[in-house]
Length: 173
Ligand SMILES: [Zn+2]
Image (cartoon, rainbow, N blue to C red):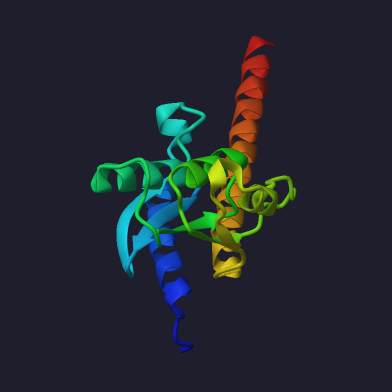
């Protein structure tokens, strides 16, 4: 078996977090903050459970890291690993917390994330280095299988409802 690189190793930890979300019926996206080669915090998407638009994996991981360090400004050298290309909100949070490097797995399909633009924009006098495609296949497979099974469930539900209606109308006759 191919040995994992350092980046891949941390991405696997982010995938584990994503799987925790998956078990709770969330879109499986996970993130971890790493400092000095150690995982400081992790988070996973909890948007459905919390019904909060801001409950993204990166926000959870960054907030937890800030709490751990007791500072909104993370120490120099903090890295964020996330299974899916970050959205603009999470890029903004990363810049606010002064994350130095971001590694993501799957690319956002629609290509509307503005990831590199925001990383380079020097907003807040801080730039962050972004590397995409770390364990890309595994990270996108995680998302794809979630959406396939969700669509399957929706289809089954629709058929079940259709059957119920049919039974109901035949009873009427
Ligand atoms: Zn986000």
